[in-house]
Image (cartoon, rainbow, N blue to C red; front, side):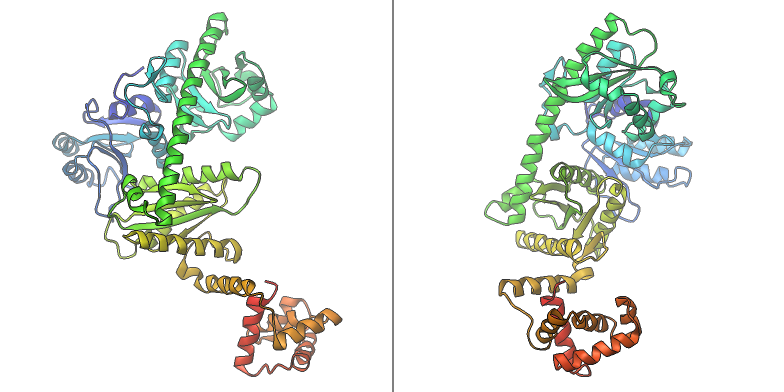
Length: 538
């Protein structure tokens, strides 16, 4: 198990190791830790905190830009640069690494930038769980699951993963390259492959794992999965009657009494750290929620809350997000949405703050460059996020204009809420929107609210047509509405109603007679359309 400082480059390479990363050149045994994770964007002037780890997404190591980039990052005090492997270590690049002091690291083929970002943020989340350097459980830093995974692996002499109840990988030990393709795929994806998990469920492995306290052995021959060649031994991690997750060791051979006892001891140790991690994360989440809620309300403590979030004096873009589908797991899914959005946004804007407040997820994103349209950039980030989570979370996101003071933030929150409501109720089909995209629909919804508050009812021609339809089931109101929507195109309106155009012409004549409505008068047409939109059944 590595004893390097938790947030050091050396620790990242130790824990992620040959499965994901390789050191190309540079010194990773530095006493200073990594302060932040940032993504290099060649179109934006970098705003980097000292000792940042920079992800060179889209940087071509063979393009000749690598050496100048290393020297530029050295001027910012950057700790390391990650680029896609393979990386040719030319004399020019080697000299740039030495002169800049920036370690050059390669991301192996098969691993994605999103996976790497999530893994490193999990390792650097010391502040998120409230751990100090003096807290420990079982002789290991409290809540440091990667340190725990390495300790358990040393105890069992086998590479292990620590997984939650949904087979998501929370941490893993070194030596994963000694296992098989299935384990490597699991580690890279931070999730047990669905086809593998389905087969385990069919075999009753998860049932036995969570029902019994003894280890469960999974043979490659029994599983019949070609990517698995090494036997798995798993044990549930419990806190009383609650199952927190599981430990999965890749080791062949008999599971004798000594190994069983080692797994039982390991499960108790992991349980302590998972509880500490969950407790600290819950406290931090509640604190962040309270601070963001205070800022958005704009009360007396808003300025102080903004300072505690590290966003004082910053120009901020407000985003709001929610789920389109409400179910029995709505609260848990909302927290998942908040966590996912936080990881996604902070990969590009490290100082952003995200939390679920009420039934909505809000994000405060500082504008890091003097861009002409920062909201458009945030909208692109949001669209990318919606696409990424679409398989698991059906989310929509609203983006409000940037503002610098508390009143502008409060106004931005209100505007984002307006846009979000239109996307939920207005059937726009949009997944990401700004007010410019839905302003007319927003005004219509607000007029409907006003009319409902005043108990307004349709009057004049529309009232006469509705009364006639109620007595005779004549379909005059829907015919008028379809004709107005089609801008007077009888054929188009008739097709929408699935009736013959002559039938619609007859109904329109009855509309004129019964409603006493002049369809040639633009003012009367507009009045009818407005009443149907605001006071009608829509």
